[in-house]
Amino acid sequence: MQRYGYALLSGGLFGAGLRLSGMTDTLRVQGFLDLFGTWDPTLAFVMVGAILPMAAAWRVASKLDRSYLNLDLPPATSHRIDRNLIVGSLLFGMGWALAGLCPGPALASISFGGNNGVLFLLAMLGGMVVAPVLRARLDRAALADTTAIYDNLSDTDAPINPDTLTDSPRNKMDIRALTPTYAVSPQIEPSDLAAIKAAGYTTVIDNRPDAEIPPHLHTEVMKAAAEAEGLTFIANPVIGGALTQENLRAQAAALAEATGPVFAYCASGNRCSVVWALMNAGQASTDELINTPAKFGYNLEHLRGQIDALAAEAEADRI
Amino acid sequence: MLDWFWGLAGGLMIGSAGSVFLLYNGRVMGASGIIGGLVDGTGWSNWAERLVFLVGLVGVPYLLWLVIGGETHLTTNWFVIMLAGLLVGIGVRLAGGCTSGHGVCGISRLSLRSIVATLIYVLAGGLTIALLRHLLGVI
Image (cartoon, rainbow over all chains, first blue to last red; front, side, top):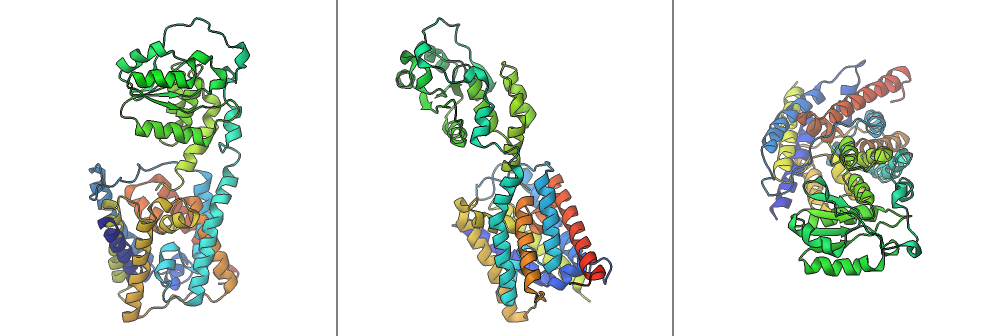
């Protein structure tokens, strides 16, 4: 496939450039960093030479929807300066100076760098294995592990004892569109589905486990009614006690596969909003993810730290 | 001395390599991200593209070495090598990029993250050399 041809070309050009510019010579790199010895400016010339065509390429890419091979282009740049970026860059700079090697030249010189070059590469790969563990530890205070997410669910969506469920009358259905493609709502009834369909929605997500729903509104009943209307119905029960990463993935997958706007319901619409905010962490600003549900009465302010942490995770490799 | 010429010429090749990877493959050419994703599993979904890139990155300098030779002048001190490798491996994955990712691809799109990262690692590298070479005389 063409894709692999261009990857080979790119890797080969990169390797040739590193070798010919002298960047596979560790003394040159250390010489650039050695401001108090005989300073070697070569690396600065390499950077300028590399950045010029690359800046032009970014300008071209900014006018494209897809790459020339019809592949996704990289996501928009991130301006988040976090602790990982600072600590990581400090450690990298120290190691880079110690040996005079960074990942590109370490790989480019592996065929002629002898056993010591191999030793460096192995140590570097070891560091790359350790890094995610370390990153998780650094982030743990704020990281959204499953228990932490649950602890922050609001009381209105706490599990309900099925024995106390009644068929109380309720107000008219209320579609709360957080975005043009995603709406949340309190529990609906089969008779509401025609209106949901008429409003343009193509997929309905049920975020309640059956244990908290009266039998006539159980998932199977709703699924049959929705499919009779020609709607796609997806059960993604967010169980009181365990909102999981899997819930977030399932909701995101349902949205990705939907052919039109998606309508999600739970007891109050709160859980659907929480799932939406957490799964979009990093895609939209944390303020937006909190302020949008707030317009409909869902207060997610207490999730700010977790949305930030998930956003940081999502952005870890973004340039 | 033609050092600056070869630096500029080699740099242009590196920037062209990054341009090809961006405009055709739609990806940021960062050495640490390409290999790091293979190592920790986050990049297994497109492993073949990464592997082919690495074949070029390792293979072409090997062919050049057959013709014009080459020497890395890497220290022979095992402790320094292993410490440096570990610091580089951990550092680039925490920071989400290295000299090619943040330094070349990030700066060229004016990413604040990349500009800050590059300033920090160049400064940290300069201080490390100053301290270990000139004050302590270790490397």
